[in-house]
Image 1 (cartoon, helix red, strand yellow):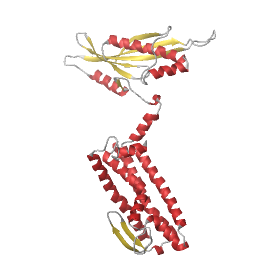
Image 2: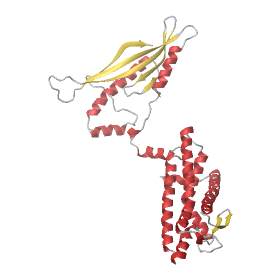
Image 3: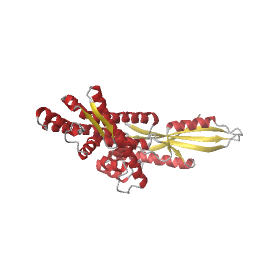
Image 4: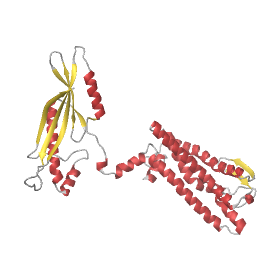
Length: 375
């Protein structure tokens, strides 16, 4: 999945074909990240040589490379090894710093601009490809051979160092391959973690969860569903409301209780039968006039599952909706005792947000509590 989406994020996707603006943006990213990568690589090596008091004969910047000539005969094996590692490690440290900045921006601001996300991703790709890019440029410029007056390629430093000490550079080649392999794994892991969790606010991780998570892991709200905090706010505003002619609003709460005795299995003569029950709450808001007229304003239903939905229509439709809920609750107990095969077939025929309950049991009842609680 990462290899399929990475070219698309960089504007290299073949379908649909990239537009001129996407290609322009891609060239801009390459241009903006090429020079920081190149100069960080060689500046870190120059600082290390300066700190170790190694004489530097030439340090010159170019658009495609940097000329760094020093007295390699004054450098020991450990220092030469660290010099080879220092360029890619500096880029990885810069990438890690950008990841921390990106993480802090996500915590503080919630998101970051898309341009910044793509810029960090482009720099991460160059960090992974830095040893290969430096080796390619050095090979084209003929830096694989040793010369005291010309720069030596990073990939050939250990070879010529061991060749000068032991008359054989095989150990240098093996050590260089091992170091570059470790650097590639480190750089790719960092890029992978960024692309999976931070790029475009973690869109890749969200796509992965959507493709591999089971249906029960998703939360799909019902139509006209609202939170408990929003319902509390509506009720408080209704109690505080006053009309121009002295009208007021009152809140009435009805509890619909559905009960059923547990009838499955054998029950001993002295045992107390188990009573199953579910409660739905109907919240109605009325406008009361001074003449005694009561006009319906809004009403809500809290289902046994805990979902709160706003009902559209009159009280008859609300009662019909509540009867349907009671019927669905009764059928839930029937399906719970059914075989596993039948339950799987029922789930495959209904969407994840729908219930499998369609009818009541013979011994069930859905009786509304007629007590009205005014607030």
